[in-house]
Length: 110
Length: 113
Image (cartoon, rainbow over the protein chains, first blue to last red):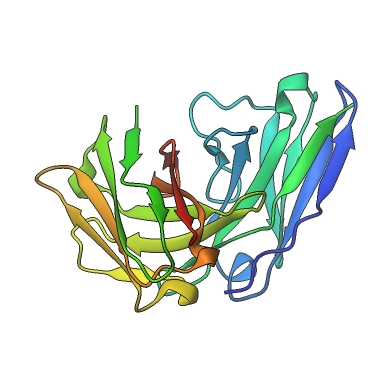
């Protein structure tokens, strides 16, 4: 049940694109198409941004997109906006009804 | 719209117990798998426990096995987490989540003497 690996921080200027990676193993990220991404602003509850690797819930801007290659999943945010500044967590199904989160990535909009 | 409201958090001494509850509305609770996720101060999210929609399957992260018990009452649309033998490292905000897609606001648990 080791945490997935994410960069501790990323940054970008308004209008630019950033990508956050999430690296696991064949027992979690690589083994299932059940990766989700969650946004969390300070002192707020998490919010689902992407599920099943690349699906967007209703109401999430299409600037947010997800993908996966092998044991690494990625979240790309295009056309960065100030309100995108937050912590982002990936999460993967890890088999036998267990899940694992990444350590989180702090996105700074410069 | 998913509405989840956690309650039952507080301050407890090491070795003590707490029972968290999560009230659900806005969706068909009896058809939804549910989770508990926690976040220690200044730390990331940690998956804690899962219960299948009918309560038939229950799973836990290794660090809480044998100490925490997840349960649900579909007639009342409530999810519970009984936490026994609490340790300082259990200090966190505890969130309930519908299928890890809809989140509650969280309840603070502090384990300290």
